[in-house]
View 1 (cartoon, rainbow, N blue to C red):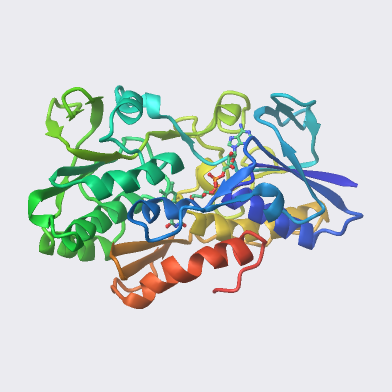
View 2: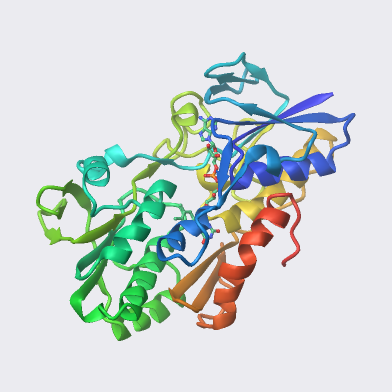
Length: 390
Ligand SMILES: Cc1cc2nc3c(=O)[nH]c(=O)nc-3n(C[C@H](O)[C@H](O)[C@H](O)COP(=O)(O)OP(=O)(O)OC[C@H]3O[C@@H](n4cnc5c(N)ncnc54)[C@H](O)[C@@H]3O)c2cc1C
C-alpha cells in the first residue's frame, strides 16, 4: 500500500487529493492532506466582499471539502526531505510518503514593505485586501469614504491573480460613481512594469476602459515604503503618492517550509518556487514529487483556474506513475481571469502558454458567471475533484 501526501488544502491541494482518492483504489494507496489551517477561503471573493457583491461568509472547514477517506492532518509543515521521503511537521511526528504533492501556495508577507503592517493595523485608511480580514474591514471604509485619493499598489514580487488589483480598482471607481462621489475621487493604480496587465488583447481593452473612466495607471512604480503618519507611499525613485484610502497588494513569496526547509525549490531562479516540468507538473529532480498552483515555477498566471487544470494533470500522472504506466497528461498553461469592469459587467481573459483564447468582450453574462455561478461551481464541483465546464 502506497502513501500519497498532499501539502496544502487550498485550491490545488484539496482538488488533487479528492481527484486522487477517486482514481486510486483503497487497496492501492492512502491519501493524506496536511494544512496548518482548518479554513479554506474562496480567495476570488476578496475583491467582491469589500463592495458587498458577495456575502462575507466565504470559507469552508477543510473537513467539509475532503472526501471522507482522505486523512486530514492539521499541522504546519516545517520541511521536506525528498531523499528520505519524509515531511517534518511543527507539532506531530514526521510523515513518510511514497508520492508527494506540493500545493502550499504563496506566503503573504506584509512586513516586506516597510510601514505596511503599521499602516494596516494602526490607521483606518489602509486595507491590504489580499488578506481576508482586510477585505472585510474595507467594506466600512468604502462606505464612509467621501472623497480624496483612492490608491491601489502592487509589490515588485510576483502575485497571485495579477488581475485582482485591476478588478478592485475598476469596481471601486464604479462604486464611487454609483455613490455620487466620483468627481471628488482620484483613482490611481500602480505597478512596477510598463503595463497594468500582461496579456493582449485584454490589455488594450482595459486601457480603453481606463481612459474612458479616467482611472490613472502609474507605471514603473516600485513601492519602497508606506508612511502612515503622512498618508504617503514612496517609490524606490523617491516619487510620492498621497492617499486617503489605500489598498496595497501585499508582497508574496514561497513558503519557508519549502524554500528554506527543503531542496525542492533550490534550482529555481530566485529559490522561491518548486521546480517542475511545466507540462507534466512533475519535479525536475525527484520523480515521485509533483507540484501545482502558486508554489511552483511553471510560467502560468497564478490562479485557481490554473490549479484547477493542473490538479487533473497531477491526478492522472501520479496515478500512472504509481501503477508503472506512462505519464501522458499535459498541462497547457491554461489560466483564466474574470476581469470585473463594473457592477454587472466583466470580460474574461483566458489564455495558455500559446497565447489568448477568449475575445476581450465585456458582458453581463460574464459577470453572472463569475459572481453568481462560479462560487458554487468552485465549492461543489472543482474542489471535490470534478470539472463540469470545458
Ligand atoms: C484577492 C484575490 C483574488 C483572486 N482572484 C482569483 C480569480 O478571480 N480567479 C482565480 O482563478 N484565482 C484567483 N485568485 C488566486 C487563487 O486563489 C490562487 O491562485 C489559488 O488559491 C492557488 O491555489 P494553491 O493551492 O496554490 O494555494 P492556496 O489556495 O493559497 O493554498 C495553499 C494552502 O497551503 C497551506 N500551507 C501553506 N504553507 C503551509 C505549511 N507550511 N504547512 C501547512 N500548510 C501550509 C495554506 O494554509 C493553504 O491552505 C485570487 C487570489 C486572491 C488573493
